[in-house]
Image (cartoon, rainbow, N blue to C red; front, top):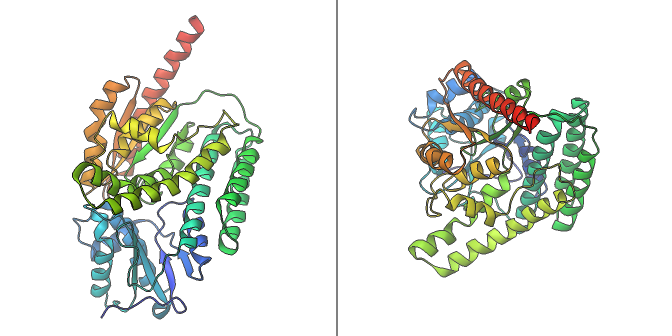
Amino acid sequence: MEPKFQKQKHTLLMPDLFPIHMEFLASAIRASGYRVQVLRSSGRAVLDLSLRYIHNDMCYPAMCSLGQELHAITSGEYPLDSIALIQFQTGGGCRASNYGMMLKKALEKLKLNQIPVVTFGFSNLALGSGFSITPLMCQRLLAALTYGDLLMLLTNQIRPYACQPSQVQALASQWSAKLQEELATTRSGITRVKKNIKQMVRAFAAIPTQVKQKVRVGIVGEIYVKYSPFANNHLEEFLQTQDCEYMLPGVLGFIHYCLTGPAVDCELYGGNPIRRGVSLALGRIVQIYENALSQALAPFPQFHRPPSFQEMRRKGEQVLSRGVRMGEGWYLPAEMAELIEGGYPNIICAQPFGCLPNHIVGRGTLRRLQSLYPQANITSIDYDANVSQVNQENRIKLLLSNARDRLGQQQTASSIV
């Protein structure tokens, strides 16, 4: 019989999926009376432990996220009788649908199968695990994602041009602490969210900046690797050293894509109309938060505004059918199209080992994207436990070198005119 998570007894250990968002998400879960800790371990020791206990055919995101949990329980830092592991998984045909089972098998090998595992995904919301997801928790989780998306967007756009870059980080830390405390202790309805994000945008817009022309880079790819510094070898930190501006699409849009997927299946292949209605209703709820974020940015044209989900769908349909839903599906080329149209023509597509769907909708759509956007400068970067970081960074430097040449040619042409 599998061990069951007990709210009063266990502390939930969560892998670090989205560095800016995770503490917000943890605070949202704590508000429902759970004890939660985000794991920040990384490095070779974590990967080696994962490779020892997880089948080496599993994808690289599994190696990283499961490795963090295995490292935590073998580190001696946590009392094993009072912890539980929470594992996020997507459902469907993705290998991430099997993360919970792979983690349980690893615990058996370690003879630690008394540790409960809670799975948290789109197809099985922790049913029977002892962990309950309530409407109020969902409301807080959506607020957390909105705060994370906006804080990420603002810091990435202001930092490269700030007169004092340290001021940007200080302000981000202040807002992060304030919002974490609020998510853990008070109600986070849409009215409060709208008030907070409007204040946040005004605060960042007030930071003094310099007018400069910089290479602008968009980062897309598999949902874990494109965000996680552990998985992508600190890609964002590297880009900061290269004197460029970079943009990552938000997490809310991906959640919207996942939640409305069943409705697409019903439309294209048939199915239960009730399931379709629930799927569309969930998408409309997420869209309330997406609209709030967009409206908060509207008075400040210096900031890039994420397009609506309907706009993203139109961009994606230029490249792929909406029926392509495995992994990131049609949403990945839609993100690339949106970034290119938004002024980020230089795209890094993070492709992890073992993620066949991501390679298909990433590399497999590049020719079509190049035909639609001749100005695009796109490169795919492979991430794996044994891939050289130097090789990855050299390929990114080549992308940036091409981008700087193009930027120089544009400046020369504009000066002549």
